[in-house]
Length: 605
Image 1: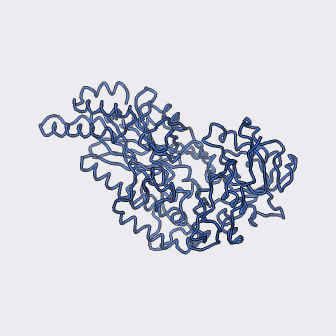
Image 2: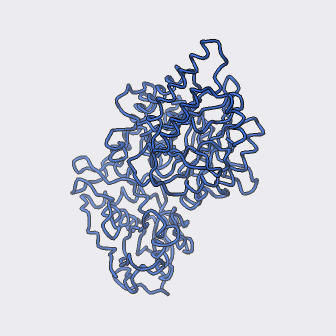
Image 3: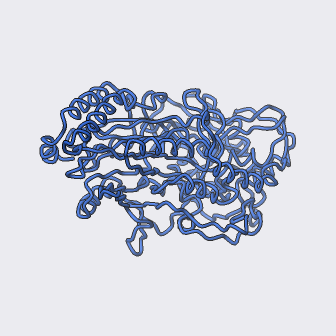
């Protein structure tokens, strides 16, 4: 809200509201949140109620509840390990998320408040098998039942390509056969997939040929009394760099700040004064446990907030899987909420927009947010439970098939000091051994795997590994690609682990997991020369820069994803089978499997 608007509305505020606003501002300035400031808000509501009862003018302000989630990633069941709790409190699970949303809406309704439910991207993609086996149709159905109304697209919404994302919105079934590639669209013939009832938003995703957005750039929620809230939905501009190239072919992704700012006058021309951005990009608080504050927050969302038009009243963010609740200054040095609800349905952000009833604008000082843990001590939602039970029965034959055994309780993705991991070695070995990538007699001699694509440790049931276990590790259904790279290109590739977007400014280096290749890197060396000269060996022999080598990786990296453009310079590319199939087949062929030493990458000088 502009300074002029505040001056115009200030004279109409009740004394009780002013007092409450002061208390809230002090609480937020001290790093507090809704829980600390709630008493002031409740006092305000009581003052307003008594004023109306006394026959005096109606309150100058009212509240609108905005409930938000992000980065759900198809986690219909509670995630395991650290992804299934918040600071040690068990959290998440669609049956509990649905209940918490219902209870929060009911509480708002009891106070006479309107409510709207939104999301900030990555609702699907990188999903557990229960959802992924059916192209994430179960997750869309579950979110429909939870009352979601609008969501920005995230990068993982493009995992199966933008055409498949359009189907997620509009519905329909894929002719993929019954369980082909361990997937099955519309498995219940009596209930075809109807698509998302909520609106996907993609303000900064354009078709290159038409310059039209993939989905609507914004949506306007109009309440019964005529009040309006506009929601602008965007994914991060860097999406093409972190998804498969084929999935975004023909699309252009534009700058988040410029895109949102250009839409502000459009919304205002439609009578919208309250504007919220749903942004699939985020930040990193210095204290990752402080989910209801944001001490020392860094990351892209900080700069984006600083550049956004002051007319934008709140930013609901995602992508980084962090929980935070911030009040950051906008260009006019006025407070603006910036929030994120962690991931996997473990938190729900409740925003209470305080709206000036005369102007329709948001009173920032009295606008509050609270990240609420989705605890599992509530009654599970029956409709969601029935939906999950149906798909668990349908997925069981695929999920429970034993594909091999391991001789240890698990094979971990936890890296050593060189950033090499036992599970990374297993996956790279599986890729190198996969016969589907051999063409013209050319057999790969080295393999590379991105660590971000290894989503969980490989677990077992008393040593038995199922397809479900394997899929939890590699849920993306990427294709393997073999290609020719020169020694010079491979050397450049290894340096890209420590430079560019993976350089010192990144949260951590992005060291590829390898097979068939060994080398040493020096943490103290400058970017561009961290790989120790002469240390690179392929097949036990020193790398020769002018020699061409056949290597294998997944199609995501093949396109230059994760900041590895060296892969995009490779030649004679050949697409093989799915990475998950190579992984499963390797475990079957090496049954039982014993983890090997992490001695392929070393740290030295």
